[in-house]
Length: 458
Image (cartoon, rainbow, N blue to C red):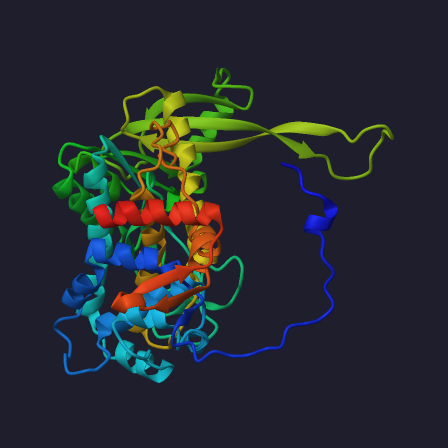
């Protein structure tokens, strides 16, 4: 039914007067109730307590509770630790943490400073377990793990940081952790924390083996795949993957092997994949290696603008040059499938970008190493929990693609935060029963009800 202009348009003259509530009943984050239900379904508080159970238990604010606050802090979208002052009196946040008031910044810093290396090991295991539980629930027949490093810059002289490769802030100190990402879920599986001047391959072999063995123990029948960049082109790493029965595809660094350049220069016939890509394959090994492996050499046709003065006024000429790369693999599928599989490796950069933008992955809050490691793991958990929240509602599942794209279409943590979490609400007790009244339109109400139904059923 159409409405008249008089029914819709109204004149507004006065500004409302401002009054402040003591915030004992009002919350700015009523959507946190969804994560509250998820934490209970996953038994997150108790599992965090087991991670830090070896530390001093006489604290009022234990390490487990402080780490839980860090996870909530990231979910709410705050960056600096001092931003906790902007939600310190929120009743729903306090209820999630099981306290009447939140610890201040000094307490958080002291508690994290007292953590030890065992705490980091336990928290890494917890991150892995949550992802492995989800993989086991889905029962995937094929699991792809991408291994890559990402620079985490620090504005201060943090312990364990160093000046190294840093394309965005040259000369700045940084960390350079190595991440393992499950491609089908877009979730972080594990992290190896390292200083910023570390080569990609440092500590990589044992870390890769640990991740593979953890997945293999939980899903013994699944086909495991790994994708790596040229920094991991090492016979020891590839042999380890073969011993672990992992299908892999890794980039080969052209700069180190002049014989590959000669193979390309002498090649006359390239096999066509499409209008852009072509290839040929061979078996090859560096002189220092003990055995040959399958190598797929690929070229991509790309437009390149000619530099210098133009001779024609009507158009700007372009030339077609080629971009080359080589892929080593133990896969037995066609070269076209290998190229598509390896090219899908760029999807992990999307995960890094999403986590840095919406989950504060790139922020370094402390001067000490172990608190910074715990914070990075907390941001990884927050990113994974946002995806787990949506997976609990059982979205439509897509088939496995040649590039191993995520099998679910999921929203980012930032989108979940804007659409659901940051909703005004009021905690009341009508007839003695705790109730949360949420200010939400019809579409948000429907999603609230659907998510809560699935979370409570779990």
